[in-house]
Image (tube, rainbow, N blue to C red; front, top):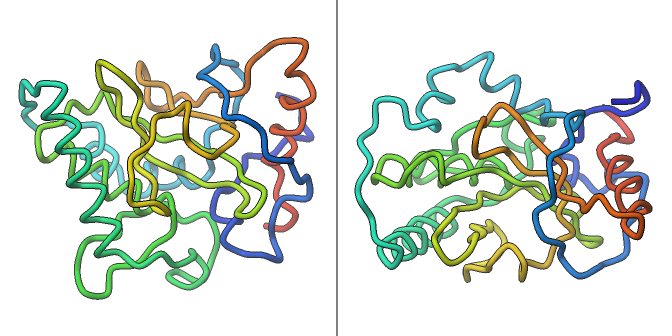
Length: 220
């Protein structure tokens, strides 16, 4: 990856004064693209797994039993967990909850539970794994929308579609119908690997360049 590129920071989207310098115009969401080897893992994700390995092991499903869920049961469980977490956890920026940016953590579900987009995604992932959902069929993704900036979500794989569990919307949407320009996604094969979600075609080259620039925060 060129030296000028820095890991992107989904948490910066919560701070209006720290939004990415490059503004992308809304476009139709794109399908999952082939991996790009030099795509950076979010800094907060790396720091979370370094400081709290047990949390990452829990999200990876280590020590959890998996259920033989039908596709209909998977969707029912996804809907239940997404609704519960969105209803019980207040959306607050990292600056409001921790005093600094790019802190990936679990929110919990207590009366004072609060967190930003990736924190809610982590809570949903852990609760799905605890309920028996296969951990290898869950992954994080980062999208971009001009009105909110970068935004992290949890995505669940089912037989019929990839379902986005969004902290901003109650309804479930498929990957293709979600209102974001997808920037990156976590690999299902190796969750320590993050890949580009921008199509690698000549026509999409300007979008690829812009998406890479979005990853560079205006302030740290």
